[in-house]
Length: 581
Image (cartoon, rainbow, N blue to C red; front, top):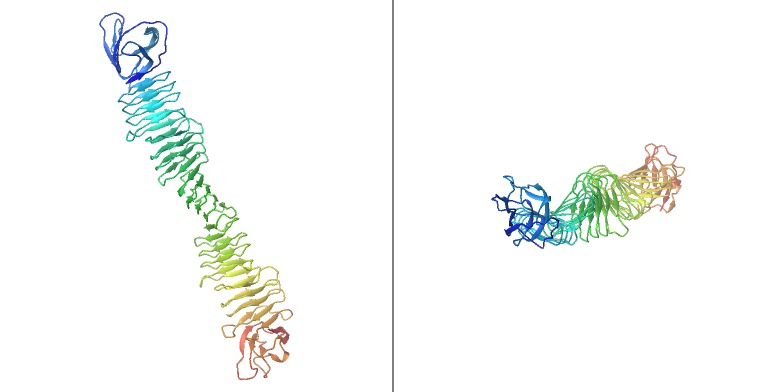
């Protein structure tokens, strides 16, 4: 161990000792020539002179010393004196201290150069801009105040930094090294660990290695840089930057409100509240059990808050949100891509999101917004309501209900996909594989069925109901309703009108099907009450006993009458109930 340019502290009372020394071994000879004992000191507190007898430092710890004392009995327990009372080389001495362990060097002032031994040294620069080299061993190096240069050498070294102009040097393969910093710090090359000290709001940045960064009690920003880094925040509101799938972020419970900013797909570790995706890549963000905030980037993101009431904000891309809590929130700006919510609970789309998909087998509801939405049900019994806009609604295997309010709405059902209902506030024709249509409100609306045996229910307005093919059930409700028949007649196409009112309802017949009838109101001669036609002019026959309504294309001729509807029996039907088009 050696020293250069060490600054002494001068005292009064000067006595010149006889000194001879080699580097790191100093011989002090004091007083008369009486025989004395020589002692070997391993790292004890001393005053250091060079080989010419010049004072080099005050209070330095050195590797070894050899003392010859004369006229003083320091016996078998040698101590090195310091303080005041008697002096060596102008240094007042009054007390003594015996230290053990590895070498320690403390230099109190000036711009010093300190060299450690091959052992485990503790080197302190204190004031001035020092150069400290640890040499071999596991060294602790603290430059103190000033802009210090610290080189640990081989071994697992620890550096203390407190000045932005401090420099820490490590070469590759020289152990696992740590910087402990009371200021914001970026690790230099070949240093593995950085620990922030105190309670200040400090930043810690890594290098290309797999670093360990440890925050303090303040609000820290931890950025491991390249490599699979382990970052541990403290009690403050910390920010972590991650860029490697092997990165780890560690937070204790109640350790502040913490954020991860990520350039890769990321899942929040325990006790971290916020995740922000960076850049333009197509990345995924997943939360934890807390009420998380997830923020997407400009790419196509998948945001899944997990448990908790999460707030998820997409960016400019085509984003996918997973929701599972009624307290979840999804936020999209206008023109922010074509976005989708996938939900395990009943859900209503927030503004600027286009698509909603229900997951699982539960009986869930899906509601849209003012856009032209796409709603997709699951295997349960779903209620799908697109809201404003021309919506596209797809049911699943259950008994689904669709709400339509726009003539541009579409409902899609697969074959054998349950018994499904449309509730409509506009004119509506059932699409394939949907069984029931209910008209809403008081408007004068038309309801038309498909090839199935439909149930069609009118509203309080004047409705036109047309079952289409199949044996349908038609209920007009209040209002003056018209029941329209315009499909091929047959045994499988006999509709039942449940509430025909002769005072206000009408039956409309298409003359392409009901041949031989002139347009306009049915002639009285063409209508007959009975079980069959009575003469050649009878075409429409009402069986007052059964309520059957039949068409006979040739009256009492050879062709048999064909039933096309069933009314309530005993109605006071006349030809004026029928209008031909």
